[in-house]
Amino acid sequence: MKRPYVVAHVLSSIDGRVQVHNWPPVKTSVFESTAETFKSDAWVVGRTTMQEFSSKKPHRLGAPGASIPKEDSVGAHSQKTYAVVIDPSGKCRWDSNSVSPEHVIEVLTEKVSSAYLKHLRDRQVSYVFAGKTSIDLKVALAKLGELFGIRKVRVDGGGIVWGSFLKASLIDEISHLVVPVADGSVGTPTVFDAEQGHTKRKAKALRLKSIKRLPGGILWMRYLVTN
Image (cartoon, rainbow, N blue to C red):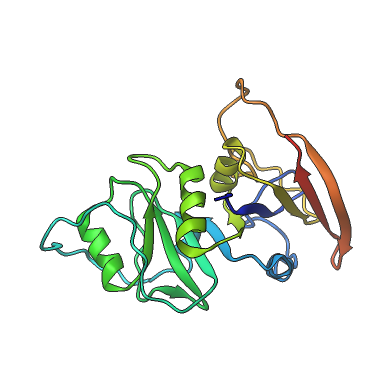
């Protein structure tokens, strides 16, 4: 089965920074309105970003009672769209199996505990394994397609997740919203945080698909990844 089509949907200052803490007021709601135009089957974020949507309760993990096999699990759900979190160690906690209205899928490594798997099973949260100690995004995408019928994925961040997909050559299209802000911070997250310094990895060549000026001086540029 062909892997899902991957769109990296990003918003940044003109110097590529993605943390808004020191920015003047900007219309960041445009991120959601433009994201909806892709009509993707799933959106993907990293664990840190997903914790904004997961449970705010501590949910202490108890003993699982028995060892749970490290096998993929599809929780009961009726939704046709999905919220996917890259969570290698299993740190997100859940009250239910949805981030309204999407069904939650955890992408894990085999280093997660049986106690955490029980937490997910008790709440009917779906999960897939994509590596022993580190995430193999290619495996993750293949399983999202095979188990859930996902054909298009929108990667919403953050910088490490965008960078990981870029490094793995798994991005087909980049949707980049540039807000009229010059950040100037050194050492803060950028759009694509793939790895330190220049390495043998080649940068990706892009082909401009479209460019549109949005209210508030925001530019929306869409690129196809060509290599």
